[in-house]
Amino acid sequence: MDREQGRLLLQGVGLFKGLSREALDDVLDAGRRHRIAKGDVLFRQADPPEAFYVLVYGRVKVTQDTPDGQQVVVRFIGPGEMMGCVAVCGGNGYPGTATAVEDSLAIRWTAGAIAGLMQRHPTIAMNALGAVGGRLQEAQERIREMSTEKVERRIAHALLRLVRQAGRRVERGVEINFPISRQDIAEMTGTTLHTVSRTLSAWESQGLIEGGRQRVVVRNPHGLVTIAEDL
Amino acid sequence: MDREQGRLLLQGVGLFKGLSREALDDVLDAGRRHRIAKGDVLFRQADPPEAFYVLVYGRVKVTQDTPDGQQVVVRFIGPGEMMGCVAVCGGNGYPGTATAVEDSLAIRWTAGAIAGLMQRHPTIAMNALGAVGGRLQEAQERIREMSTEKVERRIAHALLRLVRQAGRRVERGVEINFPISRQDIAEMTGTTLHTVSRTLSAWESQGLIEGGRQRVVVRNPHGLVTIAEDL
DNA sequence: CGGACTGTTGAGACCCCTCAACCTAAGTGG
DNA sequence: CCACTTAGGTTGAGGGGTCTCAACAGTCCG
Picture 1 (cartoon, rainbow over the protein chains, first blue to last red):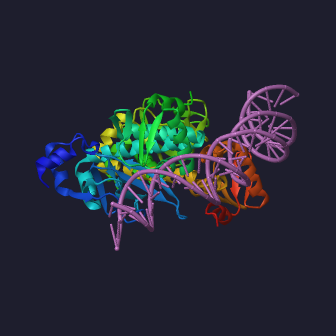
Picture 2: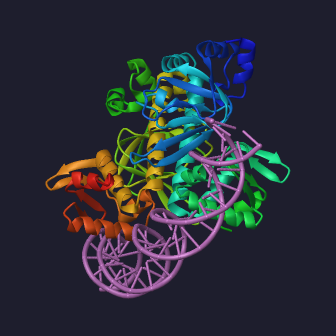
Picture 3: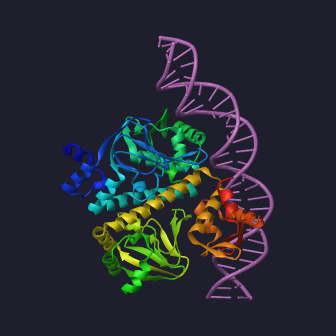
């Protein structure tokens, strides 16, 4: 990979923070560019973990399927975030399926390559630990929400999280910066698309949000916070 | 710490697997023994993360509190497992409160000490990554359960998980090896103690389990699996 | 022996899921 | 370009699983 360009791509990726120039080059030499078209699958749940990815641009949805065909959205991955880390580091099989929801670009390392990199540069392992730890905390937060909150609050929390993660200022508010369906939101909050649709319709008529096909614009984030925190 | 004894204590702790004798001694010299009486608190939610623990024997309950006073059980920690890892490695505050449910013994390292150990011995960082990754998968599994399953199945899953984690063969079946209340089970499954009590009563009259004050004996694990998997 | 904690059980209400019908927007192929 | 297909979204009606409220019983502990 061209180093000048590669360094630019890895700039700002938390996983490689604090690495020396030489270490960064070591990382770059081990990775390969990997283009993904909208709708393509990067890896499937339970597949043997062959590779690990860092997203450069685009958006990837990670889902889990239940044996009886239901789906749950684990998370959306944005630029600078990693995927498949857990699987590669000791897991036996990817925990979910990764699908691009937009045309995307990732950098790919084989399982062996990333293990070697971590052994040579402990900082990478520690950064990864911090990132995975952060996700664990998020997951536990979500468990707490699902245990203690009613659906409306959970949907509000999910929207606010999406805004924080992928919000883009537009004329009338903040837009979630990638195509996301009612079904997706339902699978993030443990409810049905019907309930999500009803809730968003109600909020739209209150002027809190503006909806559209696979599109949500939050017009009044503070109002959503009021609902999320039950004030 | 006495090395001979210390090595015995750390034997079988996944976090330190694959370490050389010298590395293990390095680890031991940095840690301190820490006794905890039943009911004592090891650390509190949102406290600045000062230390990291590995449990030698006993049992510790990790909980999260919501602002409005509700509680959620994050997990039970058993011998050989670690606590506070995520907080120490980049978090700003413990994600939960750790309370001993039995008299326990832990080994304690300061945040600085564990960071130094990981830098000197990358294997520790990678083992930690594997462990945290495993917990992340568990958490996501729990999210999926709470999204897609009814209460009865979730309680069955929780009991089976407890049996796997802390089951002890007794005359009439497998007993969960530490005091656990109906309220605890409710907080693990996102329901109320009332529903748990009703469900366990029903199962008891079917001969699946035997209950008692802070006590559960599973008499027919296979029957529970049938419920958990909805067969 | 009284108080606190834990567990049991009943009755009623309500949130939300399920089922169902229909609508609109975006592709698709001739 | 237009009929057709498909995916995504909206909305209504009804039923049921759980929560909430409430009262009480058993057990542990100071």
